[in-house]
Image (cartoon, rainbow, N blue to C red):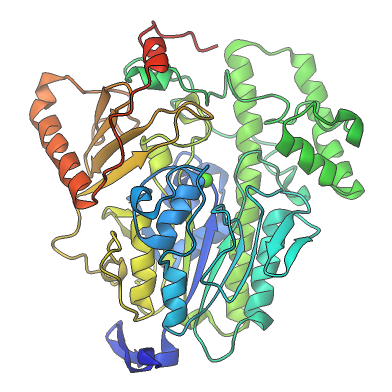
Amino acid sequence: MLLWVALVVTMGGAEVQGEDRPNILFIFSDDHAPHAIGAYDGWLKSVDPTPNIDVLASQGMVFRNSFCTNSICGPSRAVIQTGKHSHKNGFMNNGNTFDWNQQTFPKLLQKAGYTTAIYGKSHLKGKPQGYADWKVLPGQGLYYNPDMITPKGRTRIEGHCTDVVTDLAVEWLKDGREAGKPFMLMVQHKAPHRNWMPAPRHLNLYSEIDIPEPSTLFDQWQDNAPPARFQELEIDRHMHLNFDLFVDLVPGFDGDSQKGRFDKSAWRNMQRMNPKQLEDWRKAYAPRDRAFHAAKLEGKDLVRWKFQRYAKNYLRCVRGVDESVGTLMETLEELGLSDNTVVIYSSDQGFYVGDHGWYDKRWMYDESMKMPLVVKWPKVTKAGTANNDLVQNLDYAETFLEMAGADVPADMQGESLVPLLKGRTPEDWRKSVYYHYYEYPSVHMVPRHYGVRSERYKLMRFYQFDEWEFYDLEKDPDELQNLYGNQQYAPQIAEMKIELERLRELYADDSDVSVKSQQWQDQLRQPQAAAN
Ligand code: CA
């Protein structure tokens, strides 16, 4: 029953049928903060981090108020697969295993006549379902010469992971996909995830300049509720010189004799490098390490140095992803597919690039709650436009299904972005978004919290400690002034509490928020720890 043949999709006023439905190319990276994209006009714009993504943005729409529902790798992907919040799709923490037997949008697109594939980082464990072809990294995967899991078993591919994944996608576009069917291709990069290991050709990018520092690099979280002072994601105290920043990792690296000395990921990558790759790393880092030791930095100078090393490696990884976007767009052009392919660029959450003195994500603060979302939809979405409506990764599945003219199941919890992409935001579009992070106690020690964000206000509750925060984002976009308990804002706080309860009911979030953590509760009541 080829029901979809009868479906009529209205696109930009013109009616198209069947095989004219658009292809969907979903390019997705890991931990790429919107403020590290030129088109988002953030504080990193001056170093021109993403020339190709900026071109994509100039041909499509940039969503400036795009948010995740749970700022962590696996859960964000599970939300995208299902169009459901973490408590509904069952993947709440990175430690969970995704139930691939559940309804996902790639399966529904297959039913609607699409051919589908995924290459790169899945991070959902188990064999992907809903794809005609797939090659995914085991877990986090490696940056250098990575293993890939395929339907035929495990294989190792020489090269930098970002290039390997791009090549697999290009190959599938050229020769792998089923002819006569529209396609949906997910190209999911590991970069720029920790440990930030760029391709050899990018090792010297930015070496002649200083990356601008975020204004909040030396934030002491004085106004926050206590959890912000007891996290473990500071550049100062928690970013490791050796396995995060590779100091002394490279010059003396000689393989097995150093086994166990270093963090698994950095060491395993070094061990995996071929002699040429290792030589490129030695050439780039040995002189930098010598200069670092000679300088004998301390205090804020050391933090500033660590920030530079970190931000440069992060942005070098970003550059690799950006080049992938360029290559994929060129490939579409070459194959005559540009005019009928929707190209989406997104990343699983935002990231702290030194903002608030941090790296990593998890918090509901904007730097990690925001996701980049850039969409080029030829002949439908006006080129070079920006959208300020509140959107989430919860909406992607519904959007792709509507683009394909397929029905959106009633149990999906997001809203299709198609009207927004046509420049027509519905009157009743959502006025707030819901957030819930669950992974605690765990790496980086960010407590569980849920909350609501409207265009102007944000209310967060760290329920394990019964702590609240409230921000006026219009007056305080960096979220430095916690206004919870401020009488001037009592009416707005009360309204946001009602809105939070409304959303918890709307999304049927029945996950346990009575969980208390006495051990940490006691610690949080202690005076603020010195951050050095
Ligand atoms: Ca991530």
